[in-house]
Amino acid sequence: MANLFSPLKIKSIELKNRIVVSPMCQYSSTDGFANNWHLVHLGSFATGGASLIITEATAVSPEGRISFGDLGIWKDEHIEKLKEITSFIEEHGAIAGVQLAHAGRKGSHDLPWKGGKQILPSDANGWDTVAPSALPFTPSEIAPIELDKAGIDKVIADFKAAAVRALEAGFKVIEIHGAHGYLVNQFLSPTSNQRTDEYGGSFDNRVRLLLQITDAINEVWPAELPLFVRISASEWVDGGWTIEDSIALAKLLKDKGVDLVDCSSGGNTAGARIPLKPGYQVGFAEAVKEGADVLTGAVGLITEAKQADEIIKTGQADVVLLAREMLRDPHFALRAAHELGADAKWPVQYERAKW
Image 1 (cartoon, one colour):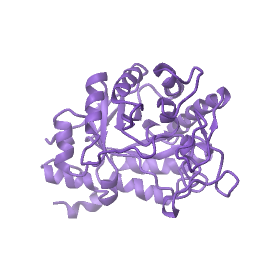
Image 2 (spheres, one colour):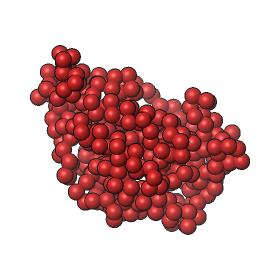
Image 3 (tube, helix red, strand yellow):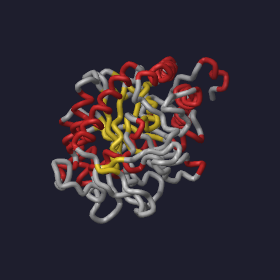
């Protein structure tokens, strides 16, 4: 059997293969509600053979959105449609996961296909953004509001409440979004966190928010269901967050019961020079896996079946997460199985097209 198609048991769930659909923002919600676009978008990956499908960054509060079109899970009314989506995913042999997120200072932006510029709080579809420190992401943007202790407590409570809704909506995996320059990442990094209280300064202080969010989710999330965290393993700038920091953090997260660390990079510093090439982030997943003795996911320009299989075969990561390649080919897993000589179950409606 191809390594990519070996099963992986994590707590009470078993992934039928190592192919995971990475969270990909669709900017297609109104007031945070999922709709038929999300059903078809995410459902196509289930019929396409992926083992775990993680929703786009799903905001735990209205102010936690990147744009006004973001998916949300901050109120009970969001649950009904999400439950329809998770049910469809499970009916077709996949696991449904949700990425819980807060954009922090990178919120209040227009839709990408409309330019993606920051929307002022006084304008339609805009709001005040928050962050660990009153530092804008770029000089041209307005500064966020520095969170006080009450604001931090609200963020933690929002993640906890979102986890309760995620369970009710039928998700079997939660991923905390701690990457790409969004709020948790902003607290982790010394370039965006210049606080002098218990949430800033030292490494232990800067990781405090993420650990408290993890603890809060663990209070309501069943112990038998997996909990992931996505990190930016490197900030790609001098004086920023490093792979050594990521290994140290992963050890702490493992002690908190986190099952897998999803290793991406960048996003917190505008203008960072990132050497893009196929598999350019795989080394981060390997380093965290070896350094912290924890399951890891590799992501970033993974586009070919043999490439993905080699990552699993060589033990660089335990799963591979695909994003844009899945947009190009939602049935990547079925094609990969064919190319690697592995068996994959096709939807009965599609069997007549099986190779």
